[in-house]
Image (cartoon, rainbow, N blue to C red):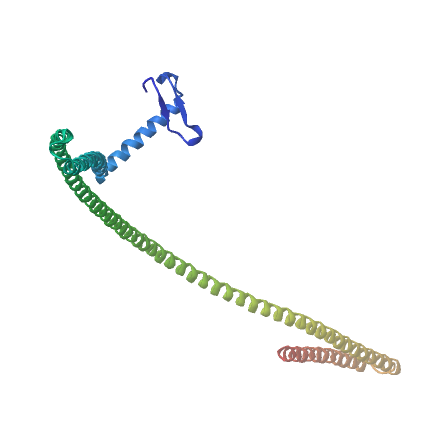
Length: 330
């Protein structure tokens, strides 16, 4: 930034007018803002050059200048025309005065001299007027040509803008279509990968469910077997209790029956012994041989009785055993 009058085009709040400041005296922040502003202006000027707005603005400036020249030419031509009209009006007045003045009068000579002077003024004024009028026509033609050129450039700019906008739209649409196609392709690829992974996961899940079902079936079968085993165990415990009760009952019955049989056998032996003693007492006078024979007979009878009692006891035990087996089976 050079010394002199400078403006830092910031926001309206921070618009600063600097006089006689060097670049070293300006804040660094302002330098950055100036640099950013210059970059923005450069980019905008390049955009205007590409879009043709620079040429259009230049042509418009030329048209404005030619319009100013045309206005000045028109003003000059109007001024000359006004002077020429005034001169002709004065000539007309002089001519009318000459008609009223006799030729022999000295005033007539004065009027003729005045008319001659006016005619001398009219000729260069007419030429100047013609030149001004020609210049006005030339400027007007140039203005018309510049306006047509400006219109053509404006039309070219509009067409160029339209073409660039259309090209930009087509490019953006193409990029959008390409990006959507690419996105769909990537999505399809990702979906296929996910579908493959899902199929594998489904297969794994099915196998897991199958194994789980088999395990559940085995578990149920095991539970059923355990239940049946528990039921059988309960039944066995019940039957065992019943068997124990029946065995205890049979034991009691056998013991009762055994006691009864032993009591009967004891009573019977006591009776036999009393009878033998009574016979011995009553037959003391009998012979020893007879006693011996009777003793032998009594001993034989006692042995037979003991054998008979043992047989009866064994038979009773067998009967009780058979009854117990039948009772158990029932």
